[in-house]
Figure: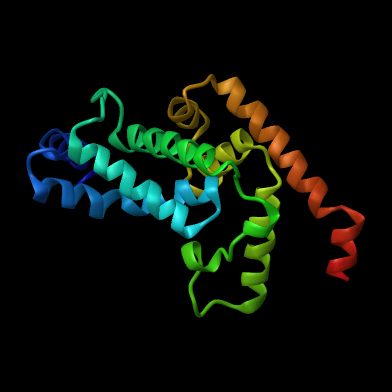
Length: 188
């Protein structure tokens, strides 16, 4: 099935999801990993990301979601996931504190991966934890999910210039962290 056909089918499934468990199950199987990755990127915690996945698909099942079929379903779903993750973060009154910088292995790495690579992924998780929420959202959408600037802006409900500014600041912060004296000491 090509992307256009899947796009149309996804919207048809969404329209039926509140009354057809099979449609909801198919949507869940197709898109739960995306929702999880976005939520994890914002919250940094497997359990919290799982809660977001459940909340998003429960809202779809209950028919509480307003959708705009002019957009791609994935764009709409990412926006719903981000908003749900933000709600979760407010409820918990914390977002990725240093103590909660979890092992990235569980969500984006192969369990048999090279230990050096895993250390770099853990370092990346800690570096992302230091970013402000909006910068972290932009980094997750652009670099982990591969959205372009226009798509990222649409998902976040902001202008492309805002996305570029957040991405620039995040990149600068991450680069400064990588070249800090403490980091250099750790590398040698």
